[in-house]
Length: 277
Image (cartoon, rainbow, N blue to C red; front, side, top):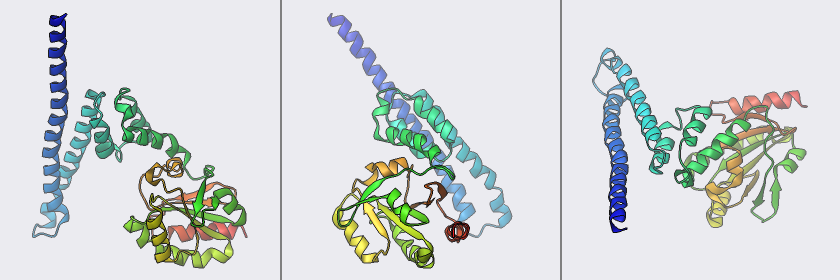
């Protein structure tokens, strides 16, 4: 019995050592590639004395090293489906490079233990809900609480207006707060024509949420469940970063998402209101 335990202990220690080495090897190799990437990016994108012709020669090198990073991360994940740390590798290095289908396949490679990682659950939820959040699809109805504690439901807001912008934000989000002056301009332009904004804060502290709301004197409807990133509303709308905006028509269908281009939001609202006078 003692001999059997010694053998098991020996094998387990070897397994754990190899387990650690796999991750450490990955980190070492990735650091080398990131150093190359930093060097090439510095030549290409920072102000320097290099000629345009000289810089151009580094474009394929930068592209190649970035492809090598993706390949390294993919192979490392495939070789280590039991290691939770590679869930973070998937999120950090591959999330923005993979299609929804590819991301889902990579997630399914992980074993039961690795799937307990909160980030695995977050990404799995994303691949489930992201396809459902597309233009033309029915938006998920939801309820949040206003600053007065009363319930605010999207479907009820839609009944009173022609088009509603759901704006995910938070007090701690600099870009969100920086976008508020522009949203106020849009709100003032279209409010009387049937446009409304329902902002959903991903704060988890009531005092910080209230303070930000008051400091900006938001004129539109604002609610929160004070659950931070654990908010099921953010989960169903596949929110991975904020600000995140979804424009919804009175029929509950999604008209647009994101609106990163200048004037895109105004154009979409104006066109919809013109068609639904």
